[in-house]
Image (cartoon, rainbow, N blue to C red):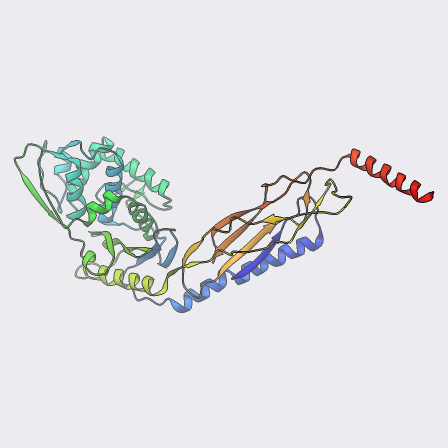
Length: 415
């Protein structure tokens, strides 16, 4: 571990302090980001077909590998993971949805529904995620959002809430589309972030992991059968979920997740080949997941038993006629744990942000600084540093009492 001390004086400014802070910043700039970047540049050499790819730690959202992962691109039917999670969170799973004329006009791949036909919304989610039916996506969108445009607004709002930075949805099925606001699409980074969010929902996992699902319309006049086409589910141990996609503009796309033990990884691929390169997405997914499993493990990095030097307190009420007050500070509780998914060679950098001097009054339990943990440029955790005792503010009554005592002591000695 690397330690950096960043002292902050509450009122006393000194040239020495400024120099130390500047030196610490220079050390942090030189030692932290460049060191990590150099390690990754040397060690990561993956041969991927995708034009844009991201490997993400689903729990923290940290990008573990990236290939042009922040470029906005069409993302085809991987859009449907957003449609699915919004439908689940709407609370309308048991409601009846009616197909409009617009919904029935959607191109293949489609369920082949008729105008006016009604379905249980939950059944349409299996059609959406297992077979990737474009008409089912529109029925879902219109039922929840009133119109496709209204649902698209909900999609884009949700993307912002999740933390997406360059995502713009126009359709609920991911068909290539463009309007005055932009082109339907996302980035590999944003797509991985959306999938990481979806993984927290057990209903989403249940639907997307189902091998097959059979259902009928509300009238019971027609029956439909859906088969899961996510081949990755049987390719690697721990494969969790995923969604494929293809359009002429987007090419083959995929977003999927894998969980082994306490590690959960997400892979997002955009523009991963065009016909006849349908298998490229599986090759890239296995390459990235294999890299993650081989290189990243959880490690306990919290620094237990850390002792801090006492901090001087000025303007303090002296105790036992001691004019030099110091106070004990303490980090967070010793039972704290901080497990970080990292490579063995990646270093944790700890920065102590503490004052050189405190000013009375000071109260027990008061937060006076922080201990921050960094992995590369990212702050992964921060803990408060608190004082353990009370220090009263100096007042003139004490000073008067002190003078009287000194006077009487001198008087006794004189006689």
